[in-house]
Image (cartoon, rainbow over all chains, first blue to last red; front, side, top):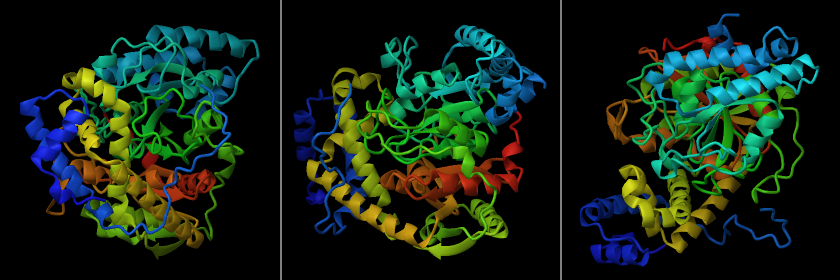
Length: 67
Length: 470
C-alpha cells in the first residue's frame, strides 16, 4: 500500500478530476479534509502483513449466471 | 385479542390463530394500520405505506383460509421491507428523493418469497440514505426515531425496520446489514435482528451498498420469528452470484432451549474497546445468565479485531463508490451531505488498497475459522452504547469521545467480514430506559447454534416482552 502521507491537495484534485466529478470549491475543501481522515483510518491495514494470502475473490469458471 | 395485542403478537403465535380462523388476516392488517396511524407521526418508520393494497391482499388471503388453502406460518402476517428491497409495481427509493418515482417492474427474491408464503406487504420502510450510515438519518423522508425515546436515534441503516418492529407497526421487518445495519437498529430498538451467513438470503433485487458485505436479514421481536422468516425466504437463488447452494434446515428445529455444555467464547477485545460501563454491566449479567443455563463460557481472543474496521471500511468504501459513481456525476448535490462524502471518499481508495483489504479479509477469516475450532459460538455486546441523540457526530463513552459511526459499528463489522451468522437480542435496559443488545455469533451456516442460544436466553428472561410507551 502506498504511503498516504503523500496525499496532497494536488493528488486530491488529480483523482477528483480523473473520477469525472465536477469541481465544487466549497464542497471540495470539506471533502479533502474528510478523505485525509478516511485514509488515516486505513492505517491499521497499511501496517498489516498480508504475506502471500490471496483475496477471497476466487474466479469460478463455468458458474451459471441468471439475470 | 385487542388490536394492540395483535400488533405485539409474534408470527409464531398469530399463525395458528389465523390457520384456525380465530383471527382473520383482515383483522391483523386493520389492527396494524390503526397502530401505524397512532405512532407514525412520532416514529417516521415508513416511506411508502400500502394500506389499501395490504387490505386487499388480506381479504384474498382470508378467502384462501376459508377455502382450506393455508399457505403456512406467514399466511396473513404483515411484513415491512427496507426501501432498498425492490418491489414490483411499488416505488423503491433506497432512501433518496433521486428515486422518489422509481417503480421496479419485478419483485426482489425476498419479496417474491414472502409473497409466496402468504405474508402481506404493509409498506416500504425508511432507511439511512442508500444504507450508507448507522444512525437512521434521512433528510429526504425525515429522520427515523427510536420508539423508546423519539429524541434518540433508531439506528441504521435499517432504522425504519427497527422502529416498525419495536413499536408493533409490523410483525416482521427486513433490513440489510453491510457493517451492522440489521443488528445496530435491532440492538438500539430492543428487538431481535439476525444477520445470517452470507449468501443464505438472496441479494437479488436489493440496491447494493457493498456486494461482498451485504447481508439481508430479518428484524423481529422474537427468536422464533427470526427462524420462521428464515424458513420462508432463505435458500439458493441463481439470480444472486453470491447465493449459497446449500441445504436449508428447518430453522425452528434448533430452538430446543437446551444449551448445556455449549462452549461460548467471550471475546476479550470487545471488552477492551470503548464500552459504556452500564452496557458492560448488563452484558456481563446476560453472559452469566447463559452460564447459569449450562453453557460453558471461556475467554477467547479475536486476534485481528483491531484491523476489522479498516478491512471492512476499505472494502465498503471502494464498492460503494464503484456502484454509485454515475449517481455522483449526475446527482451529487441531491445526496445527503454526509452520505455524499462517504461515497466520494471511496473514489480515493486505490485498487491496491482494496485488494490489500481483501487479502486482510482472508487472514481475518482464517483467524475466525481457527477461533470457531475452540468454541461453538461467540458472545459480546451488540453495541458499546445505548441509542445516542439524533445528529450527534460523536458520543461519550466513559469520558472518551468516539465518532458515532465508529462506535456503532465496532462490534458488528467483524461478522460482515467473516460472513458468518450473528444475532442481536434484547438483554436489558439502561437506567434511562433504553434497550441493550447481546450479540451471539456462530460458524458459517450454523444459524441453528445461534438461534438455539438466543432462544434459550430469551426464554429465561422477559426483556423481549417489554414494550415502548409510544
